[in-house]
Image 1 (spheres, rainbow, N blue to C red):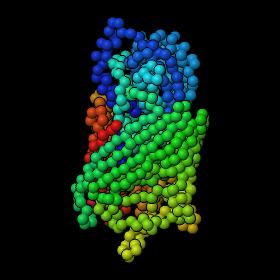
Image 2: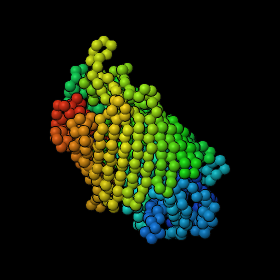
Image 3: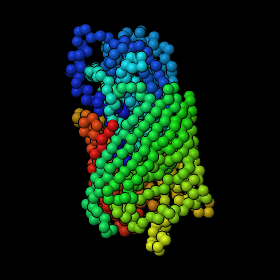
Image 4: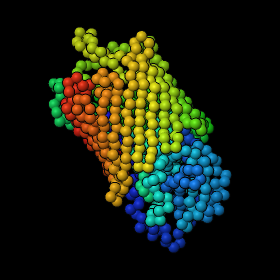
Length: 615
C-alpha cells in the first residue's frame, strides 16, 4: 500500500505555497512598483515571538503591507547554525530593527535573530534551536488598535527534511526579485493531510510533539519564495476544511452477485481550531463523514480529532481524541500502531480513526520523550455486502471478542523516544495493549448463517524507524518485534521494511523533480503473514512539476517475490484555481493466486476520481 503524496491548498504550507508561485509570475510588475519614485518606506514597529502548542510564531508589526521573501540556510562555519532568512525590501535601517529584536522574547524554536542590511532593505536571520520550516505565513490587516502584522508560523521538521530544504533554496540568489505585496484577504483554503506519507504535516501532523517527523510534501523551489497569503481578523478561532465528491469505477465484475461496478460518495471534513489568548493552549475539532450511495456500510462518521493541547516550556500535554503518525517508509507503515486503519476509506493505510488518548511529551537535549495512554478501542470496519473490496462473508460485530477482560475499555500504553543525530532521524518505541490488527474466525450468527467473528488479542510491540539523509539520497528503515500476552499468546514474529529514495532535482532544467524509490518488505511468518507482505519488493517513482497548480504523480508497484503477484498503485493530483483540487487514483491487483490474503479482493481493481472544494 503506497502512501499518497500529501497536498496542501490555500495558505502557505511550507515552501511550496502555490499563491507564492503565482505572484512570482508578476515579478516584472512588482519590480516596477518597488522601484517607482516616491515609494514610501515601511516602518517595523515591533518584533515579537509567541509559543503555541503546535508551533512557534514570529510576528513583525508593520506600518504598511510590504514585500518579503523567505529562504533557508545552514552556516558551514558556525557549527552548523540553522537559519530561516526573511528579506524585507521597504524597511528601515538595520539599526532601527536591531533595537526592536534586542527585547524580543526567545521561545520555542527560535534561538536568536540577527539583523543585516540587504539589497537596500533588511534581512532577518532567525536562528533555530532545531530544524524547522515556515509552515504558514500571512498578513493581518490593522484591527484592535494594531497595525499590519506579518506572521510566520514555524514548525519542527526532521534533520533529513532540513537538509533537503537548504539544498533546494538559494538565499542569496540575485536573479530573484522581490514580489508585489497584496492587500489582506480572507483565508484561502487549507487542506488537512492526510497523513504522514510519510511523515507530512500540519494540519495532519499531530500537535503531539513526540517525534520531529519528516515532512515529505515539503518540496520548495530552488529560489527564495514570496508568501502573499493573507487573512483578516484575530485568528484565535479558525475554520477550514473541504467537501469532496468521489467516484469509483471497477473494471472487473465482482466475485459476489448483486454488487455494482461503480459507486459515488460524498465526504466532508471541517477543522475548527481555537488558540488561547496566551498562546499556550489550543483546542482542535476535526470531524469526518462520508455518504456512499451504493454501500450503506461505507457511509460512516468519525471524529478524527477533538483535543486540548497545552504547552509549558519543554513540556506539552494533549488530552482528547487524536491522530498520531509514526514512520518513514513509503510502501507500508509497520511502526504506526496507535490509531486504527479506516478501511472504509481506502486500503493504503493512510486514513486513520481518531483514538481517545492522553499524551505527555518532554523535549530535551537528548531527544523527545513521549508517553501515551489510550482507552476505548476502535474496531476495524469493513465494506458491506453491497460494496466492493468486501470480505467473502459478513463480519458479525455483535460477537466481537477481546482477550482483555475490560474489552474495548482496556488501557493501552506506549512510550517513544525520537532524536536527530547528525544526518539520522531516529524513533524508538514500545507499545503494550490491544492489537489494532484483527483476527477473523469462522462462526455463525443467531440464524445459523456463517459469519466472520472479530477477535482482538493483547500484544507487546517494539518498533524502530530510521531515516538517513545524504544529499539527494534518503535511506529509510522500519522494523518491529511483536509478541503475544498471556494464555492467548499471539504468534511472535518480526518484520521490516527498508530501502531508499533518490531525487533528481530540476531535471533537465525544466523545474520538475523526479524521485526513484525502492524498498524491501519482510515478515518472518512467511505464508502465515496476514499482511501478505512477507517477501516483497516495492519500486516506484514520484514526479513533482513544481508548477502553479502543484501537479504531482506517484506510481509504484509491490512485487511478491514468491507468488509473483503484483499490487500497482497510481496517484495523481492537481489544483484547479484557488479552491479546488482534482485527484485521480488507481489500485490494481495482478496475478493474485488462490490462498493469498488479497485473493478475495483481487477482482476489485478500481479507478477513483475525486473533486474537492476547500474552504
